[in-house]
Length: 144
Image (cartoon, rainbow, N blue to C red; front, top):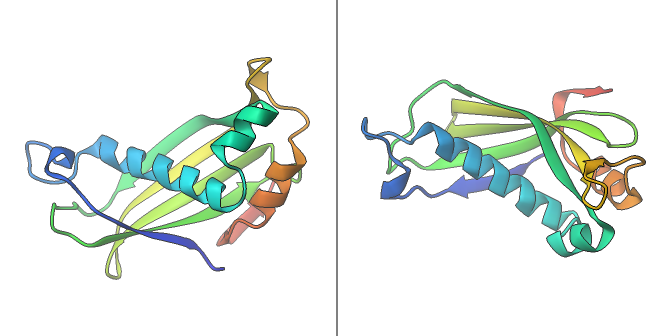
């Protein structure tokens, strides 16, 4: 599998007063896609609740290159850009395309939190390591 890909569908409520997609909608689509991918990899919300861990973000950034309008057909491609050996730290990149035109790039830096202790999970549960090792990598993937 080279990438996780998803076609996006926009709603009237996703637009701002300039009639293009509102900036915060990009982040919402990225978050939703990450959760869908984790589910596909076996890291379901039920598993996370049972094992008392969940994802946490340190940084989330979007570079807006071309505006997206209501009727645009946009495909989001998601890959792992960086990860350390125990998968406790990672960076994920979402690229939003209109055909071959790159419209936006969302980059997140994350980790895993122990939801009982309310602090970073250490060690990372094995199911996380296994799933994130299966995550498609960017061509410039860096092992941390």
